Length: 438
Image (tube, rainbow, N blue to C red; front, side):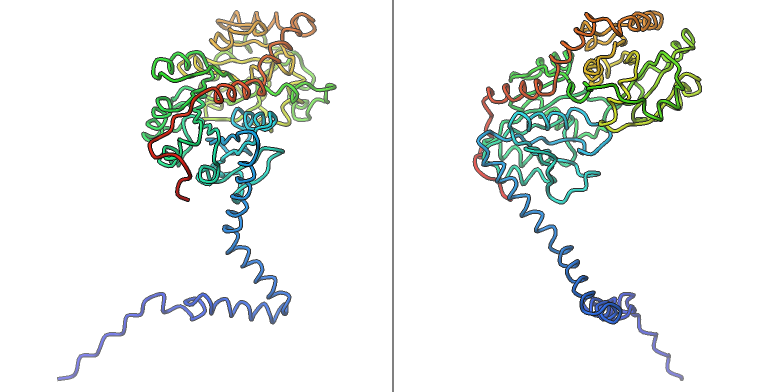
């Protein structure tokens, strides 16, 4: 009987590869030989330096970051660490970045901990004097002996609460509760909601932006809570002279007046029906919208089919004053719902700083200010815009805008938080004194 042939040996796919692909160092040798033939020793040396930087870069970045943190820690004034939910370099330059800049301008070194999705830093980076971006919160906690930690709602993803609890003895923990925790505003997970609840209960200080949030928090905690609305950088919007009309805006309105301007997110809380009503009642008015299309509600609203409505997209923060300078009236058309009832609109204070007549819908945080004209329904809103158009050169009204803008600056808000944090005894966790494990 013939012998049964032996099966072919099974060769693992990795072994089937050429030697240069199976053994990394052999691959490096072959690549180096090819570079040597084509470019000589200078080419090989250049590639080796690049490899060294790539392999050792994270270690050098960590050393630089720790050195920066220790230098910040030697400041005579207690530094601020701000754990943000958003990157620094995003289109919406708002409360987190503005507070960090204001802390730095007040002489408090500020480490802004970025999620680093778009900032693309390696370890740390300098934004301006006294203000730095930081990739890792844990390094700041480990290498600072005393600091104020500000955590923004609804808490950054990946925040290590165990490390924070362990280091409570050397920090004052502040929770900055910005907007109502709602699915329209945030992508909420169970853990983020739980961490939000823990911060409300256990932070040394809670700051909130709106009266309704203040009332909510005061009913749920015994510790201190401050009402700290949003604000504006008045220096950014008060221009020495009126700039030329931006080309995109010039093409959109083509010289037609008046211009009703808005900048901010375009989302479900924006009152698109009100824009339809304005266009129907005053077809000659031009509505210029600047901002981020947040949730797809803008195209669904069909307001872009209206001839007098112009959507110019999102604009960098640095460009906004040039657009606002050519608004005749600044509008804030929000619907009333659970989200907007608890909203402190940043644009409200930026409109003030730009010295533009303001017309808003009937929101609690808008009713507080004499410079804001309130329209409770579409007819009254249009009537208030008519009135606002007569106030563009009214000295008394412009003085009210200036006064209320000066009362609501980021420097004032930052000082309010620092004063409250400095006056608040911090709560040390058991075993929390000293440095935590690196």
